[in-house]
Image (cartoon, rainbow, N blue to C red; front, side):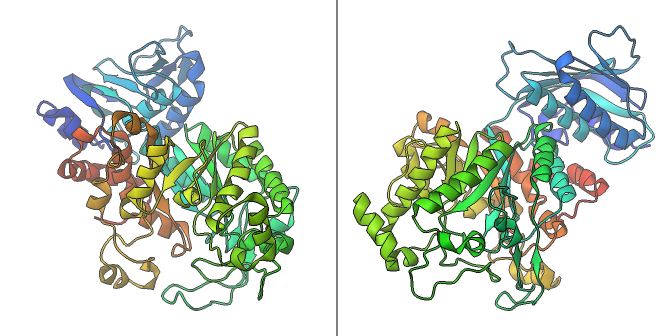
Length: 533
C-alpha cells in the first residue's frame, strides 16, 4: 500500500505547505488543514452538469491508479457517495481565468474552478498528490486548501515533426505529460526543408512528394547520409483526432506552416513556387540539417497556394493563432531573381528584408480575413513588423524590446533558456553514454531553465501584459524517436512549467528539486524516458 509518502507530506505540512507539497508547478498558496482524506477505489466523483468531460478524464486517470473506474454522477443526481470528489465551476469567483481552489478535508475533496480549464488543472494537482503508479489504497491525502492560478496564459511546448516524424499515439502521450504540468499550448511545427507533415487536400503532392526524403544524417556524423528513405505525414482525420484529444485536456494546438524559408519540401512538390529563374535552381526535399537557400518566390501563384494551405489549416485547427515561421529565410535567391527584383521595384521596396515584410503582411491580411492572428519567429520584424502580428522571440532580447515598444505581443522562447535540443549536461558527459545522445550543441542545465523570467525584457507594466508567456522548443534533428524527445524534454519541461505558472516571488530552485524527487516517481510509473538530474 503506497501511503507512507503522502503521510510524510501531511506531517510536514505545518511548516510550509506550498513548499512541501510535491507539486510542479508550485501553487500560488497552500494552507494546511487538520486530518487526512482516505482516497480509495470506492471514492466517487460528483460534478456540475457542464463538467462531464473533466470528471470523466479524472475518472479514467484514477482508474489507472486503482484498477477500478470510480462512479461519476452529476451534482443534480440524488445518489449517495460515501467518499467523494466534488468538481464545480464558480464563474463569479475572484479567481483569474484558469484558476481553481482545491480543498481536502477528512470528509471530501472539492475542486472549484473559475472555468472548466481551472477545474481541469485542479484535477491535475490532485493526481500529483496521489501516489505514483497503481496502489491498493487507501491513499491518505493531507487536509489542505490550495488557491492557484497561472502567471501566464501561454504555457507551451513546440515540437518539430519536420525533421523527424512521430506517430499519433506518441503525440498524444506528449500531450498527456503537458497536461500533467498544466501546460496549455502545443506548438506543432509541421513543415520543414526535410519534410512536409500535414495533408492538404487541394495540393496532394505536398505529402506525396514533400513528406519523404531520400536520406538522413546518422547520429554521430551530421555531415553524412544513412541512405535510407524516410518520411510520413498526418492525414487530416488524424489531425482532427489529435486536436480533439488536446482540446479536452485544455491544450490548444498552434500549427506552424513555414514561409518564406524552410520551404524546400513544398517547393520539391511544386517547383513553380520556387525562384526558378536563379542560376543552379533545384527542387528537392533536403537530406541534411541546417539552413537552406530555397524560399518561396513572391508570385501571385505562391500566395494563392499558401492561402489554399492556410484555409485548410484554419479548418483543422481552431486556434486563434496560426504560426507562419518566418525565420532563417536566406535572401540570396531573391537577390538573384529578376522576378523578385521586379516585385521590389513595383512595390517600392528598398531591400529584400522589406520584401519579406511585404510577404508576411500579405499572409497576415489573409489570416485576418479568417479571424486568426499571425504569429512568427522574430525575423518577421525584418523590414517592418506588421501591427497585428505576435512575435515569438528566439534569438535576442533586443527583438522582444523592439516588438514591445511597437505595441506587439510576444511569446518568449529564447535559445538561452528554452531550447531543449541543447545538451542537459556538458557534451562530453552526454556523448560518453553513446552517439544517440548527440545534440545540436551547447548545454542547458535544469537550473538555468528554472532561472528564466520571461518578463525580463519589459520596461513598464503595460509591456508586461504584452508578454503572453513562454514555451520549450524541441527541435528534432537529433531526436529520431519519441524516446529521445522525452529525454531532451524532461525534467526541464517541469522547470519551464513552473516558470510559466508560478509567481516569480514564489520560485526557489532548491525547493523545486525537492518536489521534483516526488514528481519523478510519477515519471517512473509512466515509463517516461527522462534525464536523471
